[in-house]
Length: 163
Image (cartoon, rainbow, N blue to C red; front, top):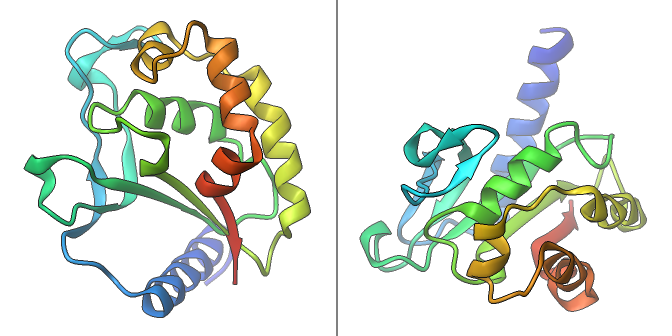
């Protein structure tokens, strides 16, 4: 295997090691299509026309009960990864996400260190966060949500570097 396929396989191996170490929980599903409210618009697409798959969805009481946690696994050397802006904003718009603690981005500690996440924290300022996202989290503006996301408590709960 060479090139992108080898990197994908390496990332998948790291993800499986993480899951083996931390255990899969009841109600876990892989590569789950995220759902959006019918009135949510993102980049010219509305509701179920918005496409996003999350790597892992954990719903202890089943997906119908809500309160699921959504995981994105990144085995990358470049932080933020090229897809960060779009994927993360879609995570914020996810119909089921009612609390920021439901979003988890896990990075491969063999490829980056915790200090590398500072670039990701700085990238939050550039995000184009639509009104439905910041209102959902009871913020008065996108800027207020960005500031909340950058607080150490929230940021470190969402973004983690692990081996």
